[in-house]
Length: 399
Image 1: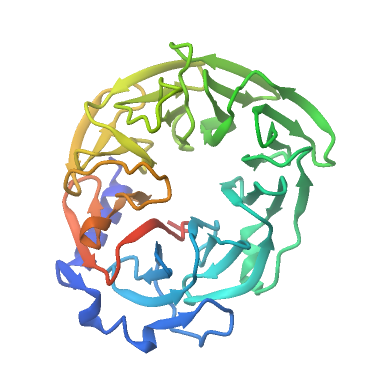
Image 2 (image 1 turned 45 degrees about the vertical axis):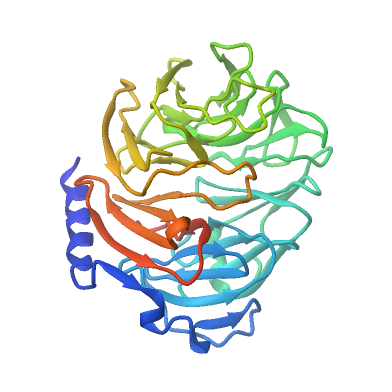
């Protein structure tokens, strides 16, 4: 690991020593009325939180200090909510029943900025742009996350898919827009549009297209039920799975590595397949290899480290650190107890979120959240929250 990464990790550990190893939210008084706010933009302003994390629970959001893990704010928000980084140092995108809403996480309040639409889906950050895909309408919204600081809805680009579907889109550095193709019943591939929304190319040899990731040198990939589809330098390339049905539905990329990390499932009839293998896709060599972890994992288990390490939170409770080039499992970092993925994808399960050299891992069964140093493998600090959490995210820019 580089000296800069090591220094950041040591700094994080030093800061953590200033707080207790385990913090209890109730002990801090965070469940009081001062720590709660209705899910509206009229909530009273609060002191800025440093490098905030945001977790969801049944009935709202928790905002936590990213260094101490102290619970600083509880925001009441009904429904099943999802959270993703907005792409700047202050905001998080919240997917709600009515659409995408923008949370000022450092300011601890929901803003008036909303992208309305049924079934808000994927949130993608790449090349300084954030892209929202609304499944219920097929609408794609692209904006510069730096413009969120004005408090007004950013001016941006909008594209509407030919038919609504569970999709995803990403804008490239040259303003090309890659967006998935499909209907409510069937998804087939992806197309690429220029900055004037004129189609450049398409590929419909990607059944069940799902998810996206960007690798080094701007290789963009979307998953298929029989491999993965890569777009690079103006052309699509299909990398076939070794099995007739080899679904790669979730991927994690890194700007420092040409290799993508993906999940891998082989049973199309399973109510819920609990795979033990992950896929590593070399976007330069156009090759795919499988790595057996010896334990299962979930769609919230995949992440990348600061130097491109492939990270997988297994149901054995450990973070498996994989060298993306060799496929070797370099080490296993204990994080939580053993767990099993629930049948319902909306149910809570341990979740991995990585920022810099720190891995944040939730443990819903114990209402806990841990910060772990990826280099040393040691827990920096932990917190116990009032309720079990579900999704976990935070701000990312500037880290």
